[in-house]
Length: 382
Image (tube, rainbow, N blue to C red; front, side, top):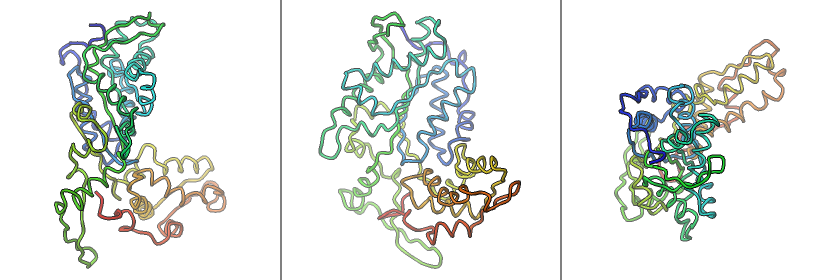
């Protein structure tokens, strides 16, 4: 069949080990060990020509879903061996939903893979080679929760069609594909069973609906309060962890069809980021706003230094906004640093150092501290 994946034995298609892949991904994706490990195993199998199940990532905004996707792309591009046999495309789920209006969401995915393969192999690459790369591609679908089948009591027709179109690609071994004119036109069958799909979404409202199910809904009483001793105080607290209570039925009710979900072998819940994880991201993250600020002050002839206590205070403040994840760091640090950035000469002489300590941070952020709004409106969220 045109576009069938290579049937070379795994030994003949050597791939990096899961541990090596996880180490590389973990340098960019902090605090999400489980998601990194799942992705590393799937990627090792995929690169080795072994069939692997698709992955569904569920996590609040800012927990690292898109960062993980970008980390995979960077990892594959960094090594000529993996780059030579990996074709990666990324879609926003809404794009697929819009494509359903023209009745061609599956074709949109395959065409993007074909175009990407041509970019990698060159305009003179034979069609057979391009189609083989298509059938062994890696497709990221971001914000997959936006193609739910219903929103409230209203049906979402485009979402239903988008799920069905992706399902067709995921489960079929022969998908008719109309070639573009530059590829000679005509229709060829594509074996799409070897394409690895990784879908991700925040699934806003899922946390609340599952919490309600186990506290006031049909499973009322299942979640028991625990006794917490902290700072000499004793209190009763509901400690709710979505990963402990999520069922497939909850995702069905959210609007993801059973047939669609059945094609994802791994459903991975990304952890909400606590103070420790946010501290690491702020200091070590590849896209850290702290590093950006250091580069800016260096361009002004200044060295920016920030004390560990100040870093932790910023992380504590960001942790009070769990629905924003790592994005909260940028907002909090912006409040701290903006006056310094406006006129650096007022705070340090050229060639000198600007030191930010906890009192400076506290002056900006006020009296908020750990244990504030970030614990959620009804329970400690983990």
